Each structure stands twice: as C-alpha cells, then as structure tokens.
Length: 496
Ligand code: AHR
Image (cartoon, protein in one colour):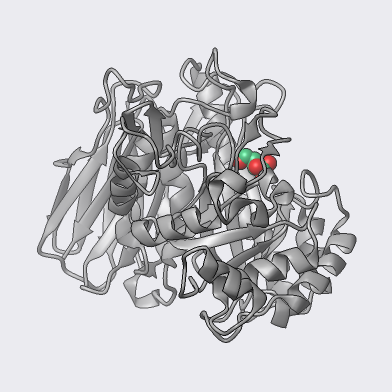
C-alpha cells in the first residue's frame, strides 16, 4: 500500500545546535564488548591491533565519527576500582564481574588503555565514576590522575605508568543507575551523595570546565528527575542522565531475529516512548532551569532482546536487524529535534552487547544496520537543527498504532541541508512531500538503508547484506521535494 506524509522545514526558526555528542556510544565491561570486542590483548598475533585494541575496530569507529565514548559501565562502573587497572599488568588484581555473567577479569584493560584508545578513535572519553561501592577519595584521585598537570601523588603515579601529559577528561558520571544496580538509593539520598561527591571533584583548571552528570531516571521515573533538579545546586550539575531501553516486555523480550510483526510494532512503540519521556523530563527540568543550562544526557538507549541462543545470558549478546535500524533512525530524529535540552546520548553498546554497531567473532568483524544508520546520520553532528513540521500517517496493527514517519533536519557549517527520514511501516511505501520555507535548492542527493524483510541482518557469512545505497527516490522542484520511501527504510538527503 501507499501512504502520504508532509514535512515542512522551517529554516528561519533554526536556533539550536545538534551537539555532536548526541551521537555518542557506550562501552561497558560486559560480555565481549571490551575483552574480545575492543581489546584482544597486546600479545595477539592473529588479530592486527595497536596496543591491544583491534585495528579494524579503530578504523570502523573513526568512520562512524564517534564523538564521545562512555566507560567502564553501566552497572559495572559501581563495582570498578580504577587503581586495580593501572600499572604493570602482571601485578594487577583480578575482578569478578558481579553483574555480567560472574566472569573473572584480569584488569588488563584499564584507564590508560581506554583513554589512549579514545585519542586514537578521536572520541572524547566519558568516565563513569564509582559511587556505589567506591569513595569520594577514590573518585577524586581518578580525576587527579587523568587531569592534573602539576606535581601531585596521582600525577606522579600516572607519569610512572608512562603518561606524561594529562588526558584532560571533561565528562564524568557520578554513579550509574543509583536507583538500582548503583546502590538502590532513593532520589533524596542520591541527591545528597551527589552533592558531596561533586563538591570534591575539580577540573584542576586543566580541561574545559568539568562536566558532571548525575545518575538519571529509569524511563518514566519523573520523581527522580524532579528531586535531582530541586535538591542539587545547579552550579555543581552540568547534566542529568536518563536511561530508556526499547523492550517489549522485561519478562519476555523475544528473539532479536525471529520476531512477528506484532513484536515489531511493540518494539517500535517502546522506542517511540522516548519522545514522551524527553518531553516530560524536559518539562520538569524547565521548571527548575528555564535557561536550559543543565543538559539531559540519555546515556543509555537502544533495543534489548533475549540473548542469542547458546551464548552466556549475562553477556547480553544479540543480533541487529532492520528493526534496530528503525529504532536508531527514529530515536536519533527525536534527539535531534530536542537538541535544545539533549546534549549527549550514548547508544548501548558499541560492540557485541545489546544494540551494537559492531559484532566480532574472533578475527571477523561486521557492521550492523545500526552502524550504517549512525554513519548516515553523522552529517547532523554539530549542525544547526532545522525545526520540522511533520504530518505523518499512522502505522496501525490490530489495536496498536503510532506515526509511520519520523523526520529531522539540520544545516551544516558548509551551508548544506540534511534531512533524515524513517518509514517504520513494514508494509507501506511513503510518498512524502517536503516543503522548505523560503529556500530554493538546486542540488539533491541521498542515501538509503533498506532490505526485503524487517528481520534481515548482517551475519558473518553475509556481512554486507544490508548497507547504504544511493537513493534515487527523491525529486526536487524549487522549494518542493517529493520523496518515495520503501517500507521499513531510512533515508538521509542532502540539499544545496
Ligand atoms: O547496558 C546494560 C545495562 O543496562 C547497564 O549496565 C545498566 O546501566 C543498565 O541497566
């Protein structure tokens, strides 16, 4: 079937920058994200690497333009003692990964490995501090270790371990999911703890102003955001987090590859919930911070399904299909459109865990449909958001319905306009009329990500089954554009 949608771009009302950090990622010590994913150890002779980090991973993440990378968790962060992960590897104690499969890790991937890797990828590091089982002293020692340029016990230690200049880490998480794995705290208790930790965290006049991010709400826990915004003085709070996963049912998440259209619809609705969450959390933040100084940081998001059969269930390993491409395209459009308040987001997680952009199997590596969406969308990074007025038809299945089309647009520093469109409808083509207020474009090009079935994915046998292709379904006449999008597709257009 064919449906019709209209989009009006409003370049005259453009005022907010789409912070590139909205396109951020997250790497936890979980399953094979770090060990086997990023890091193969500096003795691997089979897999080409630089100081233990896979070269193919570095190349792929550079291509993606990963702006910021969060580490070492997640729940793991509140069990992690950073001092166990610096200095000679042979002397490092091991750690049992309590939350994720109970596996023993040797701490061979630590602070130096992560921060040097970020430099290689060109990503800013975002360190998640341990509040749950750590101390104020431990966290402020970490800050001093990575950021202090003068003489101090921690900077001396760093230099002894081979790094002379500090890395200058700007982004710091103060605990993670403090309402759950981070310590099962009440918001009031957490807000007080946060105030104590934040008081002692200092940027040593070295990096850009330190950016502290408070552990945020679980999806629709609005009270959490309310208490944090009310009880934490804003001069010690640069960001408040929010976590939301697209889950059908926590008790019955369903396979990542074998799903019905009903399950697809429920996944889409769970992802689309982000729009409501952002609106409602932002409204609470507006009440306490009308000037929008405090950022909303969605530092965990993505689709979450049952683990791949035969894998350790604590490793959260899942495949990545066109359903995930739809989730990514729609969610990133939501973030772009709320760029006034959302200034960072981190997809969970980069390699081999949840909605991964990369999957590895020994020396093999594949890029998922989600990778391709994030790569197509990276044209929005640091561009000026152009508000869109969208009239979308509904995608209806039984008693469920939601908008079939999602859109966002921006203008980059070279004057190029980009528009990203998603047609989540798995059975309908969209004929979309796009009008641009007051601009006549002369050039149009585009790329599309699509596949025959929403269950399609890239496998180690067919690694390039799904990849972006030139898009020929758009035509331009003055300030009017017509776009014909196949079912379940993502399109990014460039106009000049
Ligand atoms: O991303 C997996 C886990 O999900 C994280 O460790 C935790 O913060 C969240 O519950």
